[in-house]
Length: 419
Image (cartoon, rainbow, N blue to C red):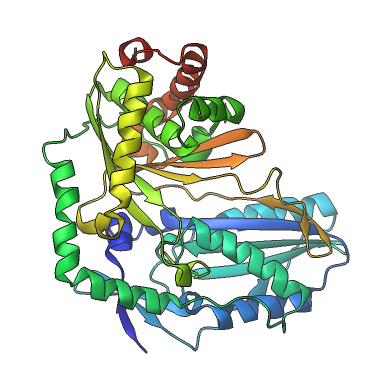
């Protein structure tokens, strides 16, 4: 077995939560309710082929002197686990499957000898199959989930097909990353990020008095923003939706915390190197961006500074993990389709997502932004017992308020925007 150290981007982002009660907080889950004349044996073969194609599915996380590392274990071949349901009628079987999936999604799989991925299925009816999979965040990023969703469909069509492109392995990525991190080039380029963060204020938010056992941040604070208005603001300012939302979130943090020097991390999900574009694994990188709130500046001028800062940051992106991540983080998934996925090979498809209960025991406050159709969905991911529901829910009204005010007056000042 080959011992591989985690890349620093993953370690910095996830090591603190990887304790017994917090590891399941890093589970990512996708599911598909498939309707039609499905073939369960073909689905099993499709999942087996995924394990053959991608080494990260066969990776196990271990600890050595409290430092995590990965080992490739080719004996892992979990495949698709078909779960027997006890209920008889269709609706009861569906409810039983969803309840069972919620339990499985919350299981700690980070340091399991069975790997960091799980696939399972429920036969809801003769013409209805539910497929669910969970992946620990140390073994995957958002782009990997999207790649996986596409590959499992293609392999279901024909498990023996050979026309699916093959990218470099996650092991190759980690070893290349390790070599770069140990280079003088990495250390020299990392000075940019250290200088960027120097003197930045620390956000101090009091812990909530009440404790919550089953309070899920993603469901508690999920909200939507009209995408057409975000598009309009981006067009007027000749920038991206990402920059618009990123600045809004930082202004919201400034408003809620009364701080005027906000540092926030963003996840750069695109694969910089073409050979890793189809790689399963944690290939995304996180980078810090800093905003000093100047109340007399207009929204336009502040956004221009943000855009320039982001462009400069991309020139140093490979060394972005040379400094610690900030507590506040944004992961943005741009629109890739005008509608939700409705087919899976020759089957009807209803996709869904299940979320674990966040137990980070840390100040990590992530916002997952996803564009679907004409709506921007924003989901907070944090430990409710650290931030409290009031802080989480406050973002809803603030971001929508900013959106309406900026559309109405593109030259609005920051002082007028922030209460």
